[in-house]
Every structure is written in structure tokens, then in C-alpha cells.
Image 1 (tube, helix red, strand yellow):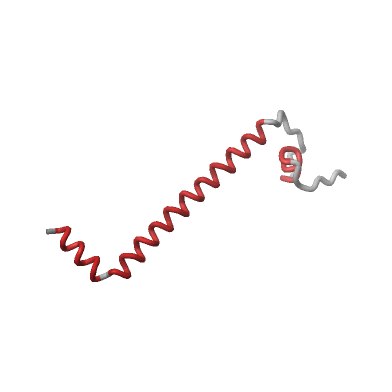
Image 2 (cartoon, rainbow, N blue to C red):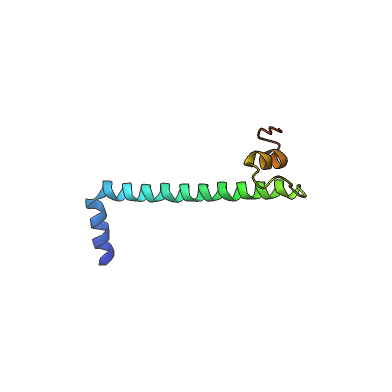
Length: 79
């Protein structure tokens, strides 16, 4: 009985129902995609930093020192 009522309600509101289902599906796909990207980038960083023994720099050093020493990126300007 309740399922018959649910079915009739869906038939009366087809567009709203399908838009709701579509938006929930898109949200789940985006959430899983972002989670996979975050996990992948964390694993990549840990694999890259694993090859580094120690980083010695001034306490006021910028992020450029870290990028250059670990990833061989960035612009080091030695004064």
C-alpha cells in the first residue's frame, strides 16, 4: 500500500524526482573523485618525501626552499 502511494507520488512529480536523483548522483561522484585525488596526492607526497633524509633551512625560510629540495621545483634566490 505505501509503495503504491510512493509510486503514484513519483509519477506526479517526475521532473523533480529525476532532478533530485541526478543531483545526488553527481554529488556522490564528485565527492568520491575529490577523495581519490586527495588520497593520491598524499601518497605521492609521502613517496617523494620518503627519499629526503633531512631539510636544513632558516626558520624564516619560505616554501620555495622546501619545493626546491623535495620536488626540485621553485625558485631559490641565494643572497
